[in-house]
Image 1 (cartoon, rainbow, N blue to C red):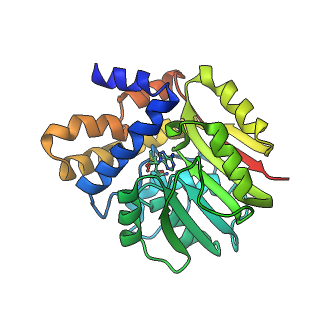
Image 2 (cartoon, rainbow, N blue to C red):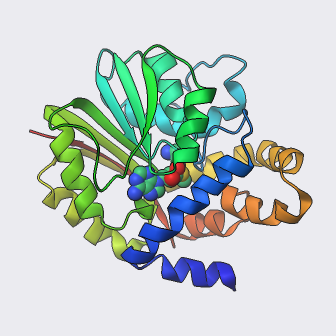
Amino acid sequence: MLAKIFLELTEFPWFRRIAWKPIYNRLAKNFPFDDWVFMNYGFEPDEQVARPELSEADEPDRYPLQLYHFLVTQTDIEGKTMLEIGSGRGGGASYIARYLKPTSITGMDIADNAVAFANKRHKSPNLGYVTGNAEQIPFEDGRFDVVINVESSHAYGSVANFFAEVKRVLRPGGYFLITDMRDPKNLATFEQTLLGSGLSLVAKKVISENVVQAIALEDDMKRARIRRQIPARYVKFFEEFGGVKGSQIDEDLRSGKLIYFWYVLQKK
Ligand SMILES: C[S@@+](CC[C@H](N)C(=O)[O-])C[C@H]1O[C@@H](n2cnc3c(N)ncnc32)[C@H](O)[C@@H]1O
């Protein structure tokens, strides 16, 4: 019942602006586990596509990490200056910094505890994390070659403000890569707003099936991790929030009540 009320309230921009930051701050403060560095539902590529090779230490994070890998390899990021907005516990930016060789990548998140966690947990010479709001990005115009955004935009008060800010901080010719999910009834408006920002569409794809696959493949590991780390009274909540097999998110992605997508755009 409470979960349903919460979800209905997230339809309102004012509620999204006040609700998400304390949740992610609390999660980072109360559960500062070094082996919990991603907060997305993951991605498994189609059968014929090669999966990235990972070190043994990164292998447990394969599915959420693959969401980053297959999004950012839509464009060439080697030698580029990158910004991730909504970087969470930092695993995605860290993977990119270590494996895909941008000149630098800065992770930015509104939850200062998550930023502090990420700065402590992930070390790489081309990597850092800062606090900031997607609707008011704390960087100067034209600063970045590539901006990425993974499963975070649903939490913003105004995606129009966010897209305007992304366009502002991108250099001409720079790329914006975004992946997230929406109720299909809101998807057309989302796309109109995205294209209305003046960024040009390069590619788009519905990836719900790839995410559902990842949820299934990661299920045993995810459940085991939750049971190992989380006090028994919170396990059910974390299974829902983390999207185990059979959770509402999993059901909604399977039935099409939610659509998971990615877009590649360029500032011409
Ligand atoms: C579901 S998590 C995804 C984190 C990360 N991208 C990943 O895949 O592991 C969403 C993140 O968006 C952040 N977020 C929410 N609203 C934000 C805003 N207005 N500006 C920047 N970050 C925001 C949250 O604090 C949270 O860390």
